[in-house]
Length: 214
Image 1: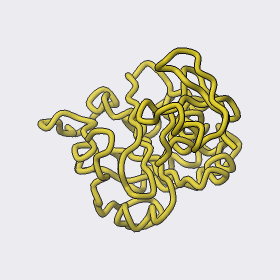
Image 2: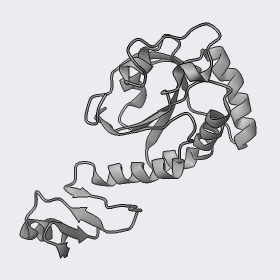
Image 3: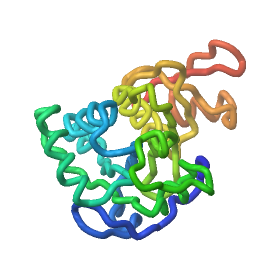
């Protein structure tokens, strides 16, 4: 799966019920985030952080859904640990991807991957990804991390802000951009077109022009 692909409309079983992904997302933005296995240390810190950020997701009109290769019963038990660690309820659903259908459809595992009995997180090591999906169900951003590196959810929020502010608008965001900072005008617009659309522009280089969003 690549950026601008349509998210597969899989029907998934979660600890909160069964959903077709497009129906669950509706007209909202969505973030799908996966992890190698329940009851693992790095993943507990990550899902705990997601739980703590519930208000931030809501401010951005964004739903979040976890993905795991373990089953619903395991998710329910693990959420107690997540809530205890984070001091926040894990109110988001977690997919029980026991047959790897989601992991394979999202290109998070090799096509020949399987889950042996008594598996450890090592068998699903590449399942540590983030997908930001727009209301039109097209993938806007993908992040994949190795087993040893916990995700930076401040960066996930920053990236979400950036894809939302640039969605359908001829602008981009520069390195380390934060909400409120100037944005970069698309090269598809001439200077005159940019001024007509955005007002004042700052021409730093012929190909690097910035403006303030109203």
